[in-house]
Length: 248
Ligand code: 13P
Image (cartoon, rainbow, N blue to C red; front, side):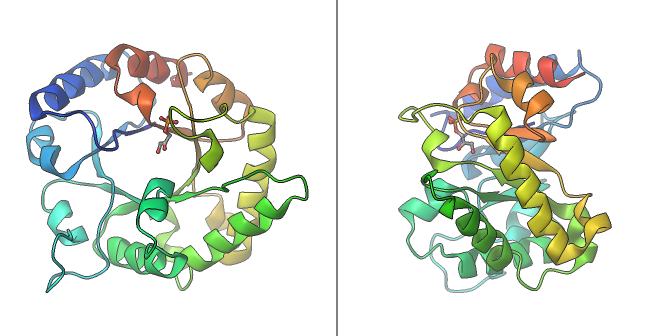
């Protein structure tokens, strides 16, 4: 279960308090891997207090160093204790038009090379009646994972997040039985890249308006192995309930 805090909370103190609540909740569960994808400025302070959850970041650049003002390399965050990195989140694709499938592929290659596990985010803008979204998702996967060796299968997580289901303005969360169809399709595409056996190692997660009421339904009926949680990960109580529900 991955918490994507996005550009929240607003202070380091609040970030630390939230981590403490989450860590407390994890002590009561036995079989859930938890990742907290924090904004860059909080990574160092969070790293010192994490005991069960793993540290994640929300982006990493595709070069190791150099004249790239404002960018942060995979190596830099790895040295802060980061184990997981979100790549290709739709909010980045949307707000940074240069964040194309090609650039996302470069970021994935670099992050994997630096020993990070990647959470590769995909998802359609619109669920059209003609089923064009299947092609869209396939293209995102094929172009994003272009040239990635099957040996990396252990280090790849796919997060399926339909864009229309994300955030406060979302129409609704997906329906788990619809998610299931898309997850099956994602698995087919992964299998065409890595072969059936290796692709089975890749967890597929759902994200988009996950809350304490629907988390278990997605995990039971959506065909996913985990969840990428936005707003509900910022409330210690709600996120703790999601973790508990995932621990079955
Ligand atoms: P919400 O859970 O707030 O809809 O955000 C989903 C998301 O984008 C997680 O990466």
